[in-house]
Image (cartoon, rainbow over all chains, first blue to last red):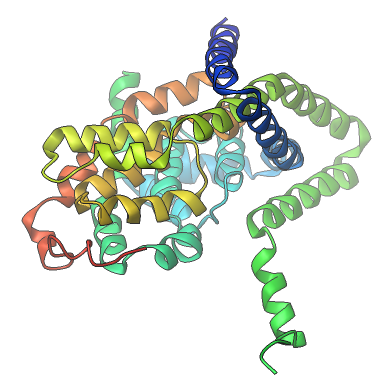
Length: 164
Length: 195
């Protein structure tokens, strides 16, 4: 139900924006369509590989290990491991989500997966080296990393708190 | 002969930089796992897993297509200059909120977002606003979540993660503004780092 609602909402937003672009001129609209098609074709194989792969990976992930390291009783050491794993997971938009989804299927606790995704989003070394350090002042990157360190733990704690 | 730098080493480095390593890792893990399941557990188990996930893949395609369309429309409709104008000097908490909001809604890849943060700083945004902007894009980027995260985790997970992550960019910006960090990143020092 919520999925259908969300798809309709997206379609609504896309229609409004398309109308705005169309009023600016047909060229703007057709350029947007072109860009969107290019991005979609770029995503398609990546999503296909990632989604199919995460299914097979989840099937193969050693359930006992995942449960022991990241399961409901893994506590703060599980969060620390999840944070470290997140920082070490390569950037790019697929890897972290694919592994996180596989870990949930294999029995990892929601709070640890939240910590993992948060750490991967904020702190992945790979993205830092490829994009952030080359394009931004090093001192700003350093401040950003320092203030970001507690946040995977905050995410895990908030998940436990809200889940009740 | 600087006009012909195509040594084999140069070509190799250029090639290695172009390779999408993330995809390569995912692809090898995926193919390895699929092959392992096929060889050790037989065709029936393999087909079951494949059918489940292929159905999932098909069902998310409309959302992915809409996400792409919205992303490119927003990019074309909102000029970068407009965004720069809104995070001026002395923006206070409002500046953090605004920076976070822009980061959340701005559809872009890492190749756009970090240079854009530098532009924001050059036009007066402080380190707090810059970090709020980057963190919002990283943590609660709407475009990213629709296109990439929902297919893997489902809508419920993503909405819950958004709920707990929404305040984080503002908090990160506030922390970054603490005077302790003046020693690492003095106020005004970012203005000189022109893009």
